[in-house]
Image 1 (cartoon, rainbow, N blue to C red):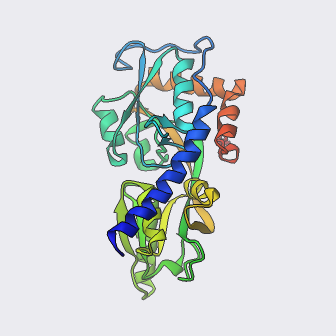
Image 2: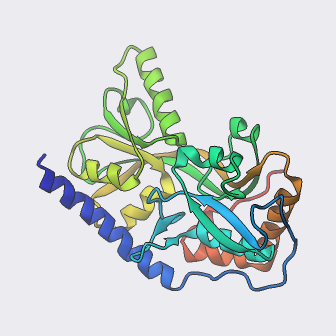
Length: 287
């Protein structure tokens, strides 16, 4: 595949994403202006009056992406703004690589992580979570593909797949590869990237057979109809997403929890999710 063709495919994906995100952002819910439901101050936060939020721009709408002006937009960005408002603080976003999210929090480069961070036992040992969304992993192929990929199953054995580094999709792909070799089949040929659009670009250009990522992200791009991809099989491994704070910082954790609970009870949470087409991904308390 010539370089010119690869660049064109990427441009189609990126341009389509920016066009829709830009339109969505125009009417995005604003920060909460209601009376704070909790207060928090240093040392629980880095700077008085500001909630520093570690996020990441993986090009993963509708959760997080950038608009045509380079501004962060998405459901998690709106939730972060609303939560900051509920605790009487101004949000300040710190963009880092996904794999650096927890290290950045631990290094006190931010106060809280809100960046599609799945709640996993290993992570719960080092940070405290306030759940606010659910997600699942999906498999994308080129639209009209006849390569036999049917989802996150043995149809991936021996196939070239791509994942975003450090994500659950990577772990699931590696686990599926082990399952394949255990059954005497070929392992998955796994490559990684830091931008979802790179995976979609390579699908469109035929460089890979499948791309694994959050099902809601894949569905978002597929819905646009211009990216040349499609979701196959059923989304798997549903998991909760949460706001992460430093382990043991009860003051900040409690404040974020109160803020989220108030967003839910006031209806603002529903408004935000409806705006981004994520009402079916609303977090529901267990038990």
